[in-house]
Amino acid sequence: MEKINKVVLAYSGGLDTSVILKWLQDVYRCEVVTFTADIGQGEEVAPARRKAKLMGIKPGNIFIEDLREEFVRDFVFPMFRANTVYEGEYLLGTSIARPLIAKRLVEIARKTRADAISHGATGKGNDQVRFELGAYALMPDVKIIAPWREWDLLSREKLLAYADKHGIPVDYKKRKGGGAPYSMDANLLHISYEGGVLEDPAFEPEDSMWRITVSPEKAPNRPEVVELTYRHGDIVAINDKKLSPARVLEKLNQLGGKHGVGRLDLVENRYVGMKSRGCYETPGGTIMLKAHRAMESITLDREVLALKDDLMPRYARLVYNGYWFSPERQLLQTLIDESQAAVNGSVRVKLYKGTVMTVGRTSPNSLFDPAISTFEDDGGAYNQSDAAGFIRLNALRLRIAAKLNKHRK
Image (cartoon, rainbow, N blue to C red; front, side, top):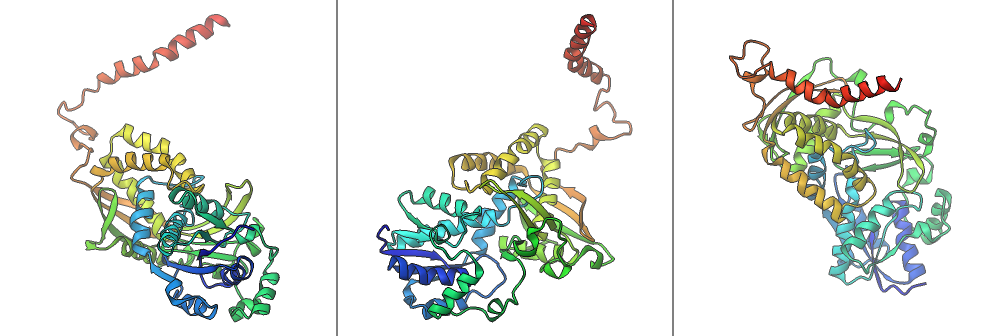
């Protein structure tokens, strides 16, 4: 076993990472630094400090940080400028959080002069890839300890037994089997639900599973119209009220959740080669995607939009597969951000029983010309006879092929 002097652990204070903390101390006999990030998971992160102290971690080695603004500003917003969707549906709520955590793990490792980082991702999941690719991109020589790939504590029962043996405090509900019958991961963009009863793709989750959205059937009977103000492709105000990036997403989550927007039940293809069923709540992101496309529809050139649409699936796979810090993602981001200079104005969306409908958009950079687009007399702004030549030229290759095929028959 490689000698490790100090390791920075991504620490939530839950069962898994609490066991990992003790396991690192026992197996690697190294000094442990804990890092707990608040990225909007909706749970109190302060208890992580108390739990870390109980495990013998020095106060100076306990890092708890509020990263909500950085998360939305530097990760969520750039991703949504690309209209990013993985496999046609998934808004990448888990994927986009991992590079930020990896970045801070590396920064804390440098600050504390640690020679390794550690995480609680399993050997079956995508998160191990995302954490480690991000870490290697930012700190090429960092050592990584992934306990799930080393230990034999491969069940909840074994983890609880290890916790009992070493006096590790465990949530009472989890000890008594009263926790949720699935695994949850939350941040400001979404909540995901996986595992347990959801491993049967035919199982319909009970309505009580969903935490931040009401069911569309129970949503208000009256629609609500929301106006979003854009500057360079990012939302800067809601209903004329200026908000920070994190507050924008928090407000949209509230509005979307109230109207049952953003539920998804998906079987996705994991990077490691297996299929995985997950349920997701992404109310704010669902609104953002719809509104951003509406804003681009009047501000971007047709071929620029087409190019962005061509590149989006590639961009989505890069995010999903953990390549946020790769040169190709950064190159694509430069291109995408350059396209957003004119994406300014406002979009109105109507929220109603699980749906988001665009009901208006305006921009000082609008390329929409009513004088040309009108179905009424345009006063010569558009010469309709020009269309005949355009059609003949575009049909030329089709006509040639048709004549050739006729002779072959």
